[in-house]
Image (cartoon, rainbow, N blue to C red; front, side, top):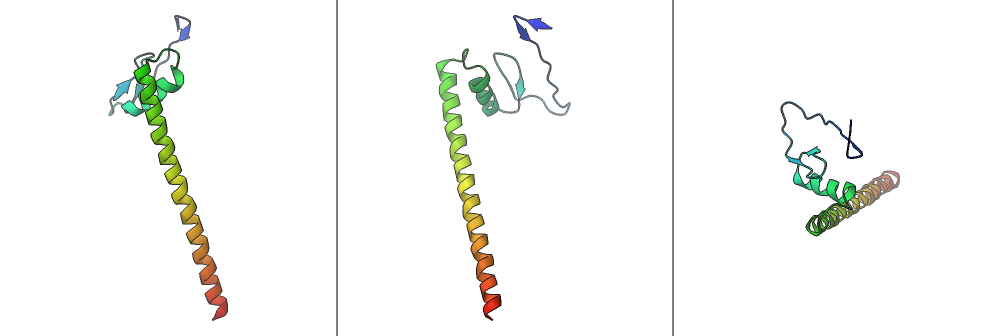
Length: 95
């Protein structure tokens, strides 16, 4: 089915779960408002308002910070594990 040149999609939502939010442009269901904000910023950039664009930019900045923090913690963890194994290896061979 085509409506206004766009394909109409149906989305399955589990029976025990109601969609938390829906996209105001295409009606797609999402679990949280944050997901709707990302969806609007990526898929509806031409139609979105300035407020929606600012909300998307803020969410993207928060996501980038969270990702940087995760990568930093992962790199430090790998470095510490490598140092620990090297130190234990040196103790085993020295003693």
